[in-house]
Image 1 (spheres, rainbow, N blue to C red):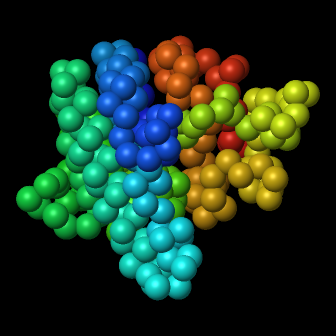
Image 2: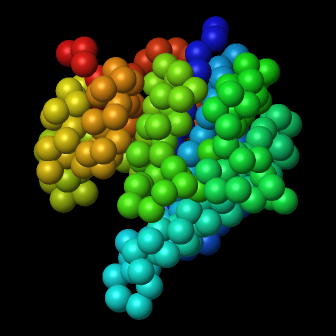
Amino acid sequence: MQKRVLVKFSGEALAGGNGFGIDTNILKFIAGEIKELVDAGAEVGIVIGGGNIVRGVAASAGGIIKRTSGDHMGMLATVINAIAVRESLEHAGIDVRVQSAIKMEAICETFIMGRANRHLDKGRVVIFAAGTGNPFFTTDTAATLRAIEINADMIIKATKVSGVYDKDPNKFSDAVLLNHLSYEEAMKDDIKVMDDTSIALAKDNSLPIVVCDMFKSGNLRKIVVDDDTSFCSVVSNNR
């Protein structure tokens, strides 16, 4: 099997039950899930948010910190998370590189598309940090952009829920999992799969988006290795 995927994790997920910071048990779990993909022959890129440390929009909400500065703070938070995930993957015996959209050579590589693709060709996991390097863009958009640049077969958004529902499953017991959505449906206000910019970018490049529960062991392997998406949600052109 040779399949290239980009997995997007939220920063909040790294916090576990603490609500902030980094839970090492979550790091260990993520490393185990990624290792299953690597051992099966998949080529894996990763993007991680920074919401467990700081969110740019929230940091700038009080009016003291400018939005651009808040977003830069958020980008740096993703670098912290990327380093933590790199350490957990290396501890699991995985060859991994971190590439940042903002130059910081003492800590990690600077993002270069050709170099990232060569790492992936050699079986290394590549973690893309610092978003797009520009303010006003989310890590969802960064993940979609990097997925396109590495010619990924799909982007997997690993979340705290099984996928996309027709209504909030935490409030309504009769909520139904939507196994497949078009890009247009995914951009509806009540769906909130990813931000509209990232979905539009995925649509323009026919990049499938798979939304799944990251906390159920084996989910990533089922999607990538077994081609099983019956338990999650897929956004694509095909109905």
